[in-house]
Image (tube, one colour):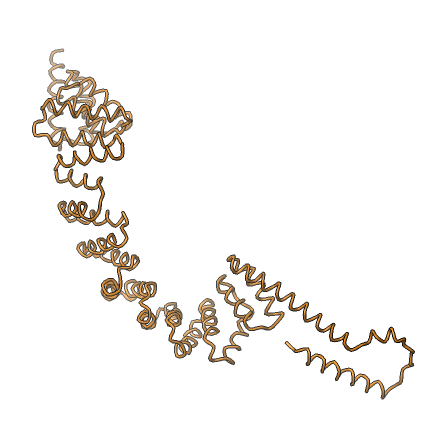
Length: 453
């Protein structure tokens, strides 16, 4: 942009030239001008007009800057790009060109100033920021060879890790993964940046096929820097695919220790279950990860019903959830050495009755309680009613049908019993001991009735 002095100089030179040419051709009539009108021709007025134009231009520029920055901060890169483009066209200021092109990069669109930027980079070889922008445009436009060539110049000038990461991108796009890893490694070594490490390990594992090297690098970071959640999750994914359960367990233990996230504690328990190491799962739940529900399940799987019953009762008292009172009743019965103990049966019935009164409606509990009442001849009629309620929720459940058949058998209603039991046998066969025992007895009962007729 020209200064005011330059504008005045050009104006005076032009005026003299006009006067000179006019004097050579003709002389105009001289008109008398009053002093008042003569004041209008004061040269200072021309300076004022020029200043006014400059002020208006600056005013327009300020207005455009405010709009461009506002929309950029709002994340409206389309409008911000538009106003930066107008600013560059208005002023020719290189900073506006750079900003217009950054907005274009965010939008993934082409810029009309790409050729100007190329020329600018050539004339200003020391400017690193301009190279970064131009490399990014080359990558977006799939001009990978140009991007590589400029990237070499960039990293020869810069020690910034982000520039090595940027320089790796065109090599990734052209499938030159080893070259990409070399550049990314230089960037990682300068920063220990997790994002760069994950990019390296992904390329090594998925594109170069060197899973062991990927694991080595991830483990090195885990042990010498930190078990960043993303690093450890990538390790966990690899160990899971390789079925290296011990290493997988160690990773999830570290993740839980560092984050206290429920999901990682569950993963540790699942790992022990997979390895059939129930006691280790219990130890972990007792010392590191507090999860009463899982601990209850572990005691059930270990058939330690006494401890399971206590935990279920504790959960019920804590959460006031009747489901856990029903669980407590089941564990109490399962843990009893004498299934006919009257005191135990009374306590179990009280627990179940209270749980149902408080809202337990799940079929599994209704059937369990109903079958227990039937099988122990406590209250067969009540037992059948409970089983029928369970069947209303799942009419084809073979466990419920077996309980109903057994209830009818206990009432000596063998005709009904055989109908229900046949449904069970048709689906399940006679492999299970209880089914086979019930079928034999019900069939014999039904046969006797037929023979009497």
